[in-house]
Each structure stands twice: as structure tokens, then as C-alpha cells.
Image (cartoon, rainbow, N blue to C red; front, side, top):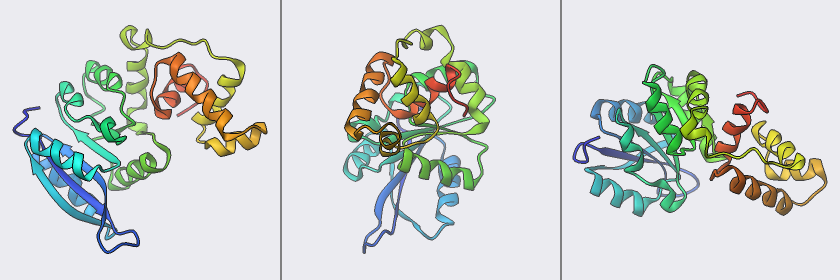
Length: 228
């Protein structure tokens, strides 16, 4: 991705406020792709255009100010995954990938540790579902990309970062996380506090060298503990 070609469109939602709240940034190095995704979202009246930016410097500046919780990154260049660091404000990165991309692209995508993966062939409904899922649950994996993402996770350079040394309780909680249950739901099931569940989750993060629940879901699928 050329730093001068990168562009971003920030959109918001009208949620009990006079001004729309920044909710989503679409970032791409292809103007047609940027315009197409923006148009898909804006067909729903709940979304509002806020502003756009051009060039990596301006894009980073506007994202740092507006701090949208979800970022969609579309680029044909795997090296671009690190150009915009949403983790600086706890944003959740959603990568747009093509099912026919080279396997090396998926390996780089997994190593970037995004919160979600969406196919470029996705419908408007899938795009909205991905955004909603990231905002609500912190993870999304497009069914069109499941095989490619799981295959990338099994490559030696990615697989070697994970350790399977989980306790029986941690594995049980992992299965429930992968099934979509919340911390409170898991706590009620085991008659423990939400804080205790959180401690187990943090222990899994450290043992598996991951940073968010989406990666736990992928690990569970990789180990045959869950079906995506």
C-alpha cells in the first residue's frame, strides 16, 4: 500500500444524540473499494458520513482524534496490515481479504492479530453483520474465509507461538467463549464470579500468547474444541 494512496472514510451512527457518534473507519488504498463499501453502509439511514482523509499521515491523525471502535482495512498488500494501529485506542481491526488470495497473505493477516476477517465478496448484510459482531462480541470470521484462516493458523511460524498447556477449567471456559457466551453467562454456569472468569481468560491469553477473545475462538477451532 502506497502511503500517499491510502484513504479513509469515517462514518457514525445517530444514537440518542444531536451529532452522530464515530463508529467505523473504512481504510483502503483503492478509491473504488473505499467508495463501494461506504456506499453500502450509507444505504442504511442509521449511518452518517462524518469525514474523509487522504494519505497515511492525515488518516492516522483523524483516527487518533475520532477513535472509531471498528476499523475495516482493505488492501492488496500484506505489509499494510501494520500501517494503521487500532490498538492505540482499543479499536478493533477487521481485515478484508479475498478467498483466492495467496496463502502467504492469510499468514500475514493472522500474524497481524486482527479482530475479524471479512471476504471482499461479502454482501452488504455480511458487512453490517461483521461490524455489529465486532462492536458487540469483539470477533468476526466470514464463513467464506474460515478454511483459509484456519489453514494459516496451522503454519509453523504461526502455530509455534501457541502453547496448549491449559487447565481443564480453562479449556471448558474456552469452549464456552468459542460458542459465543459472555463472561457473565459463563460465571453463572459455573457459579463463580465474573472476575474469576476474567482471571481464567487472562491466564489463557498469557499461555497462548494472544491478545483478545477472537484469537481464543480461532485457537479453539484450530484445536477441534469448537466449530466456526
